[in-house]
Length: 247
Image (cartoon, rainbow, N blue to C red; front, top):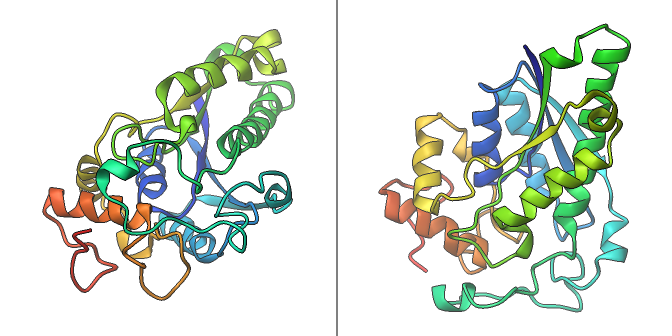
């Protein structure tokens, strides 16, 4: 059995942990990072460094036009909408915040699926692989426990997306090869994700989770607060900080 995988690597704690995990699960892994017109490019730089450290093929894909389409978000339109800061855990868990980018993950998965399908169709039709002896996997890092309430971070969404990819692809309709969507941390707390990262020897010092692109994390955005919560509860020091943020 030969397997190919695509991992969505943003440069953050979660996606880097999942990418490191994916290295042991497939024969050929490619990391995709998207420039979608968001507020800063620091996490893109981090993703490039991480992919190089892990020794995997990396592709930076420019979809900056998304900022013009999915404009109702503080991540794509920061001059008009303000990113929430210093919210309590209760506030973070209530409703979908303005940092949500409309249908961002749907576009990401579609592009990742197109890339993976191309690889697998080439393997079957150009290289002569038996379709019964190959598998394809898309690795993503959504989390439905400690997260900001995004609708595209929930298990039921990924179940439906896998079904859509199958029915919309030549790979499935002709060869019955599914594109499996792998979400290994979706049911983990941030503390459990940190523990998993430590166990996998993830290059945490190169990850970036903050919504801002400064020299050090702001410590106030939802992403910083949730990351700090994870390190604190797991009992580890965040290598990006001189001291843990306690929220």
